[in-house]
Length: 187
Image (cartoon, rainbow, N blue to C red):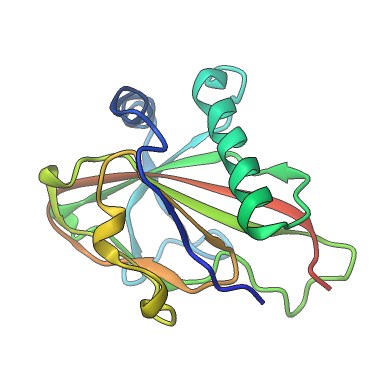
């Protein structure tokens, strides 16, 4: 399976990034893992779901177009839908983090299942406003330079089966937008 990580700098403007942060700040809730449990030892962050796509169409539609373009150019995955986008807040006061994890595991998925195939994390905060909080790919360090992902508006694309995480933020607040594209199982 492909293990390529694609970095697109300046995928979003500072204005769009700041608008997404403002949207998220209205309705943040503690982030859960797996099947809906809170586990601050694994994930310490807050999230806001953009679950009213028509309300945020001006920011969602261009991101969906970017996802389609990157998928067509680099991955070629069969994609049929996107999950609701998620604004995530990692606060240095709480050592905000998310331990390495997979966005999708296919072991028990039926051959007809619709699964997460392509993940994207978009950096919403300029790196001058926080310390730590690196996006990491522990099994693919040779395919990814953490410094490339710190610029505001940078989008990092990767197959949902790659292990990744966010190291603890030690100072300030890091915001990101996370998107998942789904399609028929790889089987």
